[in-house]
Length: 319
Image (cartoon, rainbow, N blue to C red):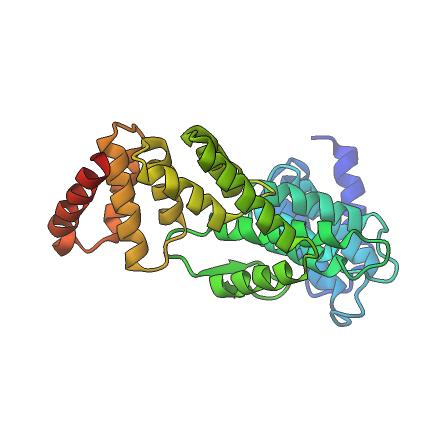
């Protein structure tokens, strides 16, 4: 280890600190932190953040907070999740004297984490776009679209039957329900100046695909609407359902998966089970693994009856 580097950081540790955290405690962490230990880097960040707030959360010491950010950033670079959450909270706090680059750093980090599937980042990004629409010289329609997209990604990432997601906050985790998110999406849709036109366009596209007689085109529309920035789950379900009723195994497995992912009640799991059974009858290789997951959610004492009813329904599809 480079002794000059250690000495430099020892000097940094000793300057500007009047906290209860002893120099010995910091020095004990320093060598590990400089060597790349994520937990040590995070711990140093926590120490400096706490020291920066000794005069109160509002009147924080920027010099100490910058030291906290430095160590959080070191840990975050190698994927330390708690450090990333700490940075999301600090970057987004416009303190007097703070680094002007923090806002751009916040957006890049939030977007990266959101794309990786982090629900905290997805909700924060959705809230960012929801608020941004009020700013001057802002594309309101694009902000609404982005907010709806990221809220929808949160819903997509919620497990079957999951109704609550806990979002990492400044002090404590914040509880957000599925209903909260659905309400936000509904409210934003009402504000979208082009929502009615989009609904008409989606309906037109589906009707044209059906009239063409091409189930492949119908399923492709379902694929477009089930994921991505043009996500429209009600239309995706309509598309898959139409092709599934025509006994198309690809549509059946996609509908079963979507119903399972969005399930909130037992009827939803029963419908997912039926379509997965139909896909299995059509020799779809993805059906059995999905069936195993769905069966776990169903009452075992009713499985024999459910299986019998599913087989009857499948025979009707085959006629």
